[in-house]
Image (tube, rainbow, N blue to C red):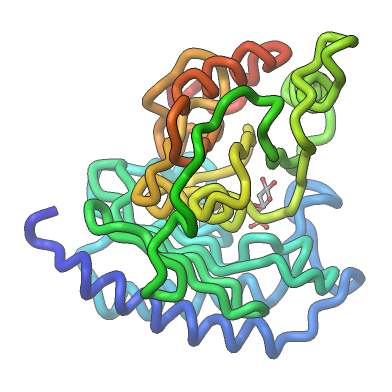
Length: 292
Ligand code: IPD
């Protein structure tokens, strides 16, 4: 990492995020005109592709020595290596974008040695910018440190506001594990549940991680999402005092491309909360096991 100027890269990623943000807010997506990838819940628009082209062209020109991985140009089998790599989601929250729900962002990350080192997450609809450089703190709109308030102790899951996501795979083992876990998280103690304050499913992994970094959410659990959904948010969360554990029980050191993530905000009792959450998961997700 010694030869990379992370501050300069961070600043450039912010300017790129703002430029891409204008493309995103000036687009007119419709649910009917959007295309699908794997299935009807896995959406992509012309704007996702155009933003990725802008970002990849700009980054490849300015940093020809840094590799690039993007959601819309990823091909199965492309492997993340230890080499410095930009990991980019041009629009995270595409489903919200096509429905005009203003909870979507551009997510620009840089991983070095497979570890997220720089993260920029920008919601152009609310003009909310989260960013971080490893070892240098995380910020909202460049100047306000994250978390937004001094973190209170986490306590039990029954004190927590928890984000989960449905993802786009809606059958099979991992779907069954998710649905059963959602029920267990929400259920009352009388029926053996954890009785969390509530569950949220907001539709953007990157913004969920930033909400955990801010302290607005206590926990976010998702299995099945990808490195570009989490790379930028990961460094922002970590710099805000949070942690990312494996979305399956037992793993304290998940890989950025491991596809199973349990994010917990900063505050006393983090590890105990992770262990309590792992105890609630109803089975084992199969996704990502090949990278573990
Ligand atoms: C999706 C969002 C969503 C998550 C999915 C992701 P996209 O990203 O982050 O919250 O549940 O797993 O694929 O498709 O909007 O870039």
